[in-house]
Amino acid sequence: MHFASNIKFLRERKGLSQEVLSSDLSLTRAKIAAYEINHTKNPSLKDLNALSEYFSISVDALLKVELAKISDYRLRLLEEGKHTGADLRVVVTTVTPNNEENIEFVPLKAQAGYLTGYADPDFISKLPTFDLPQLPKGKKYRMFPIQGDSMLPIPDGAAVIGEYIEDWLNIKDGQLCIVVTKTEGIVFKEVNNKIKEGRILVLRSLNSIYSPYTVSVEDIIELWRYKCFISESIPDNGECSVRKLYEEIMGMKMELKTILKKVSA
Image 1 (cartoon, rainbow, N blue to C red):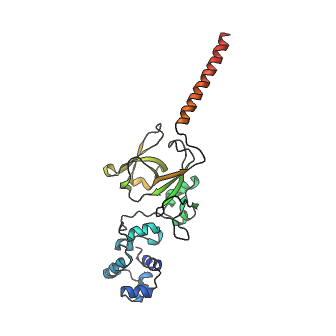
Image 2: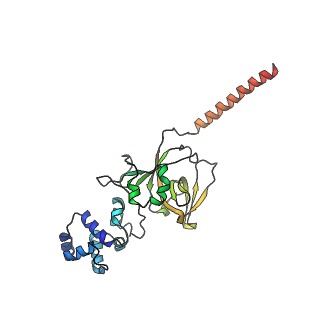
Image 3: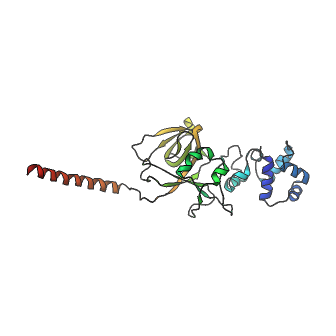
């Protein structure tokens, strides 16, 4: 239960003193102080409803969600009534001095630790951060490097930036996502959404030599919708592959002619 810390957090977020809050709600300052230091274990339903309406936060969220640890964007969703608290997936985040979302970078060496530290504010706070001004504001982004050739033409070593997905049911088939799972770790794949039918996602590689596979909802920790990638390599657009194959064939023909000349001599 996070009622005590939430009341203090919301009051300070609005820049209110205990006196002003108690006056606005027709409560005593002593009662507000008692709530904030958790001396009142069972606040009255009347007070809960009054605080809920005053801060535009559901009673469920006031009691169950540690509001100080969610981003300003997710807090605004709660205030707008788009989440009750029970259905809110909370992502630990870091912000700038202006309370704007950072983009955290999860390097390869930190990815194993991320599987257990993704909800640990201390772990997340130690990740490198940066900003990309061209990305829309009011969203949560994170960057993960990828390895291998399974997502060609996105090259090996590229750093993929994803937007945090709260509602997994709305993922469209064919969407590229960073999928954080308990068993497979962090993978970047094309997703087919079968959550409603079988509580699974079907993951496919862009490189067709790799077979698709499924992951259960229970195995998924986080989902991040692909936004862009950063790479020092130029992606192979297919035309380059054809040209390379042509050059290899022509080279083989030249070698064959040389061999035939030597045999006939």
